[in-house]
Length: 275
Length: 274
Image 1 (tube, chains in turn yellow, brown):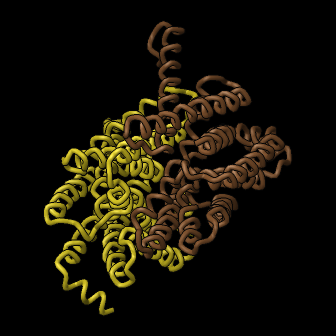
Image 2 (cartoon, helix red, strand yellow; image 1 turned 60 degrees about the vertical axis):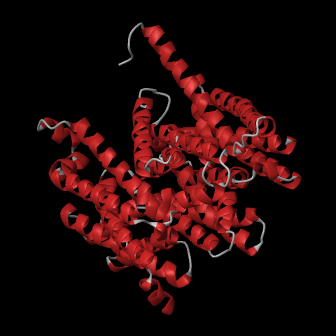
Image 3 (cartoon, rainbow over the protein chains, first blue to last red; image 1 turned 45 degrees about the horizontal axis):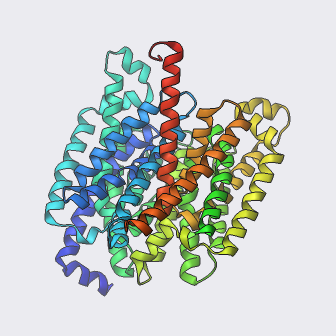
């Protein structure tokens, strides 16, 4: 415990805690829409596919957010375009694009000296090195994402359950679908500094999964997912300080533990079992 | 270098054949999940100084068991969510285990991206044996697996052991991932299984033909990718990660085949495909 007390005395640790709360809330809230639309594989794909953007952004000295988001949007368009090929099913298209894009990132990075250390920071995050400027970016982008999700709540939920009905009511279905993909991609990029590209999928799915054990109503589920996300971030960060383990890993494991407790407390696979 | 080439060719051919089945069943996400969930097995074996293969195999077996358990039976869980959950938790365990060691960053890099240029003779032999077994199993159960993929209801009506066949395919896929992980690392293996198979399916319609085409494409592009990486490193002093370069070659091959397909389709119909 004294390790934890020491850690709280450190400026960088307090910054990391704020980042963990911000990222946890944003990822939890957006994660509900990931589940409603069954996008976990898309999130995994994006977490890999945005990698070259992060690499190039870091090499050129521009923002990692900008690089990751730009490549993410491009990759999403390629996946949509591959839908035109009848012989390639959606899941293969996603798999090809994610691995190909990730490989480009690795090749570019491997050509740089001292690559392997940077690489690990991208992959599993380095939340303790987060700067005040990063915090501001996360807060602003995160607030914008939450505002978008809240503003279009009704349309997005209807679109997830009944896209036909949404279209019949005169809403622009495809534009709303694209909006969801963009929101998810940006949320993912925001998570990268905290938990890295590979474990961002944990924050974007697991807190929402845990929240769905407790309620079927989307509004309360969203609030609960945000709370679970923030709790995973804080508890995971404290555990990583106490046991001296990687923060990204311990945050993901805390989220998983929250899910297991939720599943046990709400009784097996009753609720949301077929969702 | 010749051992690395042998390993790439072996993995390419086995991955291509397994990949056609994976594509038929749309199991790309399962493959992706297994490549991440074997990571803690490898990490634990690595940290304890044990051989990597049994560790990876144990983790893969656990994943497959979980998957069959969760997705069969009456109280089914949404497969994508189950996979996301297992990726998040398994991979996190791996990261935590590795992060306890010193020299964390370079260890992690090795485990994530593999060391194809360092494979030994014994590892190539292991790959050949396990890969050969996978191909043999797929060959023996070919008819049943294809029927199951195309018409699950009829397969069940004919009395085929549906769950057992599912488990068999998961197991073969997992075994392929496990042998490939050492050489390619835990992030890029999915490309060895998904990409050449999709290219093969673009080139021909029959399932057997797609397997042959995919294997051929994987072998040729694997050789090109590995040579390019070697050439760049030795003669031009630009280090290109070998495994990743092979995957880039696979992806370029797929892009070419896809573009060719679109152009052909447009020429044939004389207008934009709907």
